Length: 159
Image (cartoon, rainbow, N blue to C red; front, side, top):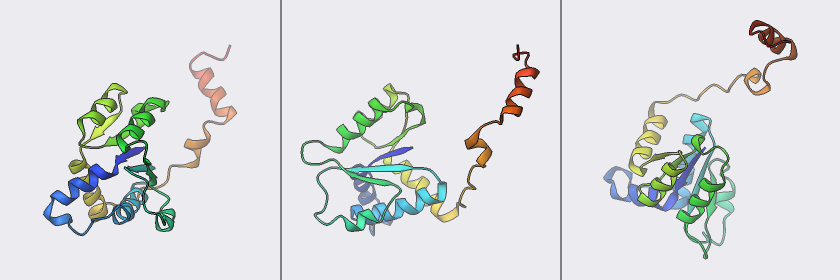
């Protein structure tokens, strides 16, 4: 799972000359939706504030999940909270150039990627990447009972 500091990523894009066409949260989410679809992984993007009054355009985007922090919290606090409560933080990647978030990710042993570096990954994937094949169903279901018995026997654990 990738958790993105949306405002931080937008700020990074505004600093680069070649990405001036992405200026709004919605435009960014649409591009990231294509990216996450191509890599086959889930993502979340968290923005400061309450977001627009009409969020119907954001409702069309299912991956990444789009979250607005609201008026009482900022996106950084929401991301830190998600890091703290996650039961598998080593599977998380936090995208932000903010030192506070990168440190919070390191404390929980999650990966941290600077916004600029992440955007290069996105651009490369969308230009050159192929969609990943879905994982085989067997991986999700696990071993059958007979396969488990064979492995238990092979390792002498069948007693």
